[in-house]
Length: 217
Image 1: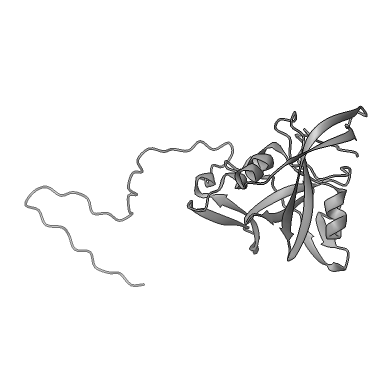
Image 2: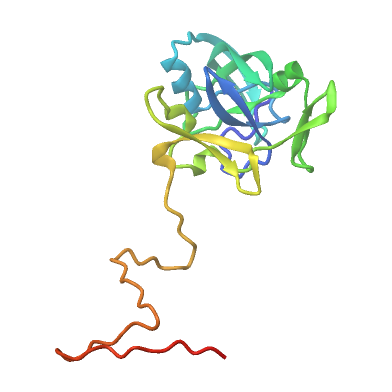
């Protein structure tokens, strides 16, 4: 078993959007990983949904080439992606902290997913003409993750301004922030009313305003 990028902080370029227990999440697909790994946040999310984990002894090679044998946790969960239901085994590495969730070759092969990283797309092997774009931005960059949503809280679907029909993700209301243009200091003080042109000047008491005739050329 080969597990790579378990604690990588690099910006993943192959994020695939799927659903688990009704929640939409974006997960990195990694052909360098032989098995699907549940990151720390997903592990807690699965525990909240009463998923039972069993001990499993695994031997794997880290990215630095060192082989380790540890007792991991294992659970089988259904993942929903573009109309397909893929029964997937998740491995949890108890000692890994802050690691990201990875979709390994086991999931990709079971779903028949082919990655076109250079083209920024992926597709099912049985229908290569129907292609899907990778998710553009990691959910970690949003103030709140999909794993923290609750049914009684308000959520919003965010779309790409250049392509309104393409939903980028579902976020909690607290994730919505005011737009702040980089390098521009915002003035949050009271806004003074605009002075309109042609405004009549104040006249002394008792005087009457002069009427102006409309001039036509």
